[in-house]
Image (cartoon, rainbow, N blue to C red; front, top):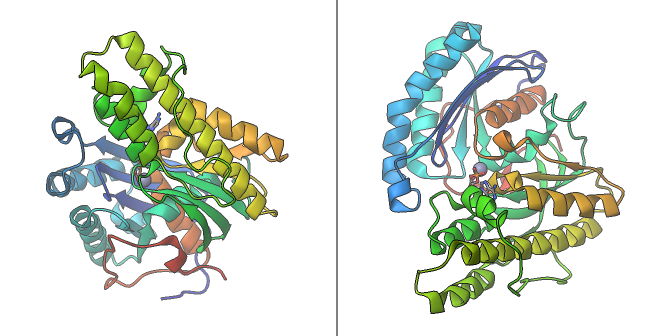
Amino acid sequence: MLIGSASRLATVLAVETSCDETAAAILGGDGTILAERLLSQQEHAQFGGVVPEIAARAHLHFLPDLVRMALADANLAPSDLHAIAATTGPGLIGGLIVGAGIAKGMAVAAAKPFIAINHLEAHALSPRLPGLIPGGAPFPYLLLLLSGGHCQCVAVQGVGQYRRLGTTIDDAVGEAFDKVAKMLGLGWPGGPALEALAREGSPNHPLPRPMLGRANCDFSFSGLKTAVAHLLAPSEGALPRTEAADIAASFQSAVSDVLADRARHALALMPGATMLVVAGGVAANAQIRAALSGVAAAHGLPLAAPPPRLCGDNAIMVAWAAIERLRIGVYDGLETAPRPRWPLEELRGTG
Ligand code: KG4
Ligand code: ZN
């Protein structure tokens, strides 16, 4: 459904439930954060990964209270909102149904429009949140989307206008961090724990750099993960902490080198890019940010990255994507169904 003159100052409540973060946020139409409530589900740690059924039940249990608390924090009633948004894909179907169901229910009860947000678009537009970079990241920019489920180079031309330049042919980069962290006996999610351990070590193990130098911007991480497994095999689990730290540092350096190389090739495929943007949970990694900042600088471009707390899944980025969509006048009908798979290229935009 397209509506012409969307308010530039719309207040939006958004919910995020696509994986294991249960979140609600309220943003003013200028991007001011009026409230945020976020709960990272701890229920999955004992299983070493997200259990979809448990995630869906936890979203159902916690989301209504988080929404109530966000409204109270912002001192708003549902009737004060201009629209209600939810992530409707890609992600785990149970969680998507819970988030979309609650957001639609509120939209019906308060007679407000509903906006269905693509989770990848929410990450992709997050560096445009005013207040992060003065004026927000200007289009067009090259996006490196680095998360637990996705690893993509995307040419971002405008809201809803995305061209995927490359993707992973096996594991996502966050998935590789999580798997290597598990091999090293670290907790879950593995990325932050591996980064912390790597700080204690030196990158003195020669690990492969998959795809380095390839003329496209695709990624591959499973060979690197296997190389770490081979490195660990002789120790049979009894590894001194200093040795584990060296392996963590070596893995992280290999990933940083690969990502820098892939970004370099992607920038060559997108000559008009105004900046290099990195988003998604792995974008919180300091070594990776530094490596990408070097690549951007070599091209005379700035690197834009959300602050670490907005790199992982959150509802602020979902609310912001909804505001961007409101600005181009795109709403969704209540019949919009959650989509566990929903490529960025299938979005409607300004073009
Ligand atoms: O974007 P996100 O919160 O969820 C998905 O949409 O997947 O990303 C989560 C991923 C996990 O794989 C996590 O281990 C990784 O991001 N991650 C990190 C760091 N913080 C989170 N990886 C490396 N270094 C970090 N500091
Ligand atoms: Zn995400």
